[in-house]
Length: 112
Length: 109
Image (cartoon, rainbow over all chains, first blue to last red):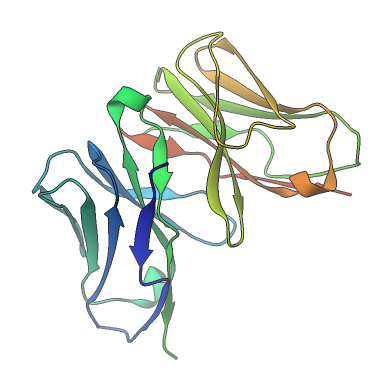
C-alpha cells in the first residue's frame, strides 16, 4: 500500500530558528495536508494543498505541494515555544474517498 | 468553523463490555472516518463511511463495527472490548479537507 516517509522523526529547535520537515511518497496524491497535534488532543489542520507546485502560508508556517505530487514540505519560521508538538503530513486521493495516508510524524521539541 | 465532536473524551471499560463511541459533525460532510492512534504505530484507519448507511473497512477493522444512520453521526462500536483496544480514537469528517475531533481516550481493564 501507499506509504509516506516523514522526516525528521524528531528535532530540537532553538527559539527564533527556522525549521523544516518533509514528506515523500511512493505514490501520487491529489491533496497534501499538514496537521499539528498537541498532547492529548486531536490533530488540528494547519495547511491544505490542492495543486502541484502550490505554496501556501498560514502565519509563520509555509508548506508546498511538490511538482511531482509525491512530496511536500512544511517550514516554520521564527519558532516559539508553543510550536512544540507533533506535526503530521497526510496525503489523500479523491478517488479513494479522501482516505488519508499519514506520515509517521515529526516531534518538535524546544531546546531549554 | 468546522466542528467534529466526540461525545466522550475519557472512558474506562471492562473487558467484554460493549462500547459505543459517538461522533457528530456539523458541516454536512458525506465522508466520515474512525482512526485509532497508538505510540509508534501512528494513525490507523478502522472504518470509514461515504454516506448514510454505507461503510467500508479500513486497515484494522477487526473487533470493531460502525453505524451511520444519519449523515452527521458516525458511531464506532466495540462489541466486546479487549485490553488491546486501549487506545486513543479519533473521528474525522471530510469535504475537500479532513477535520478531526478532539479524540476519545479508551482504557479497557
